[in-house]
Amino acid sequence: MNSSILIVEDELKIAELLADYFRVTGYSPHIIQDGNTVIDWVKDNQPEAILLDIMLPHKSGVEICKEIRQFSQVPILMVTAKVEEIDRLLGLELGADDYICKPFSPREVVARVKAVLRRTDKTVTRDTELTLDEQQLVVSYKGQKVMLTAVEFKLFKQLAAYPSRIFSREQIMEVMYSDYRIVNNRTVDSHVKKLRKKLDKISQGKELIQSVYGAGYRLVIA
Image (cartoon, rainbow, N blue to C red; front, side, top):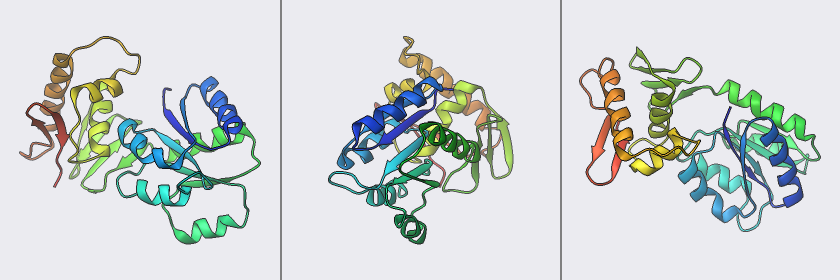
């Protein structure tokens, strides 16, 4: 388990305590204390889940959650110290997947994140014709299914998280090989070639993964 967890919390002691618990459980935590830097980091790094405190410097968790939902369905767990905030959170229908009240047990937080990740293992893109089943490593397009390797699924999931966005080979390598092994651009091209061949079986003649000369690759659904 190498899921990346973003902890957005301005109280450093709390953030570091949570990070320690996630780390020993097998996750890769990253801490951000300033609300202004969250959106860019999420776009660049695509975490598996986000713990998002409501009260943050410069930008509130509520604003951040709304912005993230404009481009990503990453699981978000809102964190609040005010019980009265819960009704407001639910009433706003922000698109958060869960909420946690302070004070909390770090073990409980880890368990809640695990539960949310289990619920969201089957990812559905904004285009409902395309679904990703992470447990089975299966991609479905218009009812047709194809099974991928673990590396191919990581690659496709990265592209599918942000349809039409161009990813450089370097960005793709960072996701595909989190152990930082040394690979070159040809390795990425080789995986893309094999992935395309598999997708051809279900894409009904449509090229889902497009090459962008000198830039990288992108997923085009529409």
